[in-house]
Length: 107
Length: 201
Image 1 (cartoon, each protein chain N blue to C red):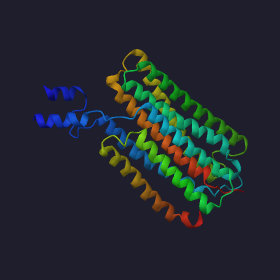
Image 2: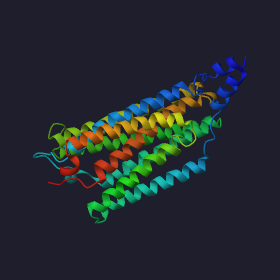
Image 3: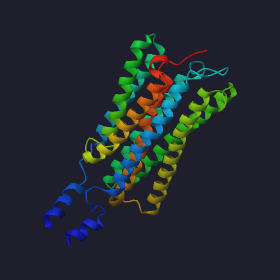
Image 4: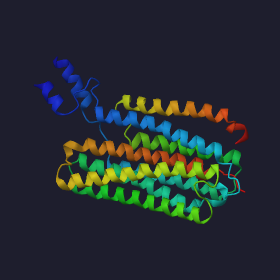
């Protein structure tokens, strides 16, 4: 009985969140990546190069915000599983949809 | 006695996790499907602009870049407001909540300006499949940001009434999760819709 309560109490304990200085550093990194993204618009780069670079920066920003600002890095893995389940399902469903509409070949 | 304390804390659940927080994560997972559908629809229709303006002709990238930066920084102010409340710093919690609501309002103001500019340039909701998909996607996102601003103002009112305390910081955390999600969705929209080279007429 008391073991169960202790387990609940342990899991309930608020996770250690980063300091304000750390959050500011994360925001600066996100700002710099956004500036790099915008810079690609003003520089002549072939689409075959710029699109994968932009998508890589987008994925980095997406997961960086989720990890630090949404605290997935520190919270229970259960939250990550629920979020990633929705994200993976959406990617699968709409990946199939775009394939059916020949988006990858005809754009 | 210990069990009662756990229940009083509001987290005496089977998983040991807050049900409210778990519910928000499940909701955000389902929101991925909503926005995934809207983004896919846009991608399918972005080349079908009929006689209306093409995406590459009408997008104002410098303006949208500033809007995106504003929304990104609102995520910082949101997380700082939570951090302040978790320390019991009510004053800074209010300051950062207000800053987040103002930055969100600035983003919405920018979106209203962008929509009216597009309308003046001949891009209405029913002009082409591209315009319908574009306005539906960005409009849905704008509605989400607006709802977030309503939540932030509600938190501010609670704070001034004295009901938003350190012990109830999870409420700010849950609203924060919603706000950050709206931000990550915009990260996706900004890259895929605006920055990836679009068709021109």
